[in-house]
Image (tube, rainbow, N blue to C red):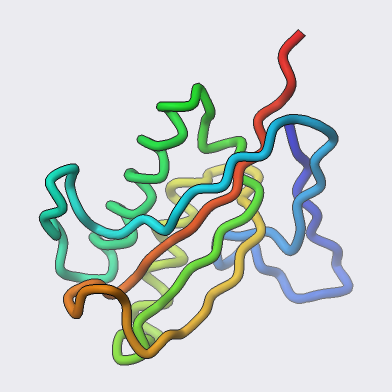
Amino acid sequence: MHISVNPDSVFNSLQYGFSQAVLTKEGKHLFLSGQVATDKDQNTIATGMKEQTRVCLENIEKVLLATQAKKEHIAMLRIYIKEDANNPENQLEISEALKTFFNTNPPASSWVVVTGLALPEWLIEIEAQAVIPAVG
């Protein structure tokens, strides 16, 4: 699969639920579109940052499962946080959701603050890139 890289020479990103880098050996690359806190009928189903982050991660897992991949195959996340929702409390809730979802070998990630997302009620959107090991 992949190896998380977290050298002592940079800050401890594990406390925030992500690794500094991820090294993959081989496999297929899977690129997931940004996921938001909606159900399959496009209804927004969460209002707070904690709940929206959890639903984003659950939607990522649903897409992975449709390709026979697992959350352990995720190598990289790009997290887009709505500017007016970017505060220390919400950042802590995102970190806690990541640590719960990725209990071992968390992926690398970038957190990007944006002025807005496609709908005003969305606070966060998460893209993922996975590397699925070659079989056989």
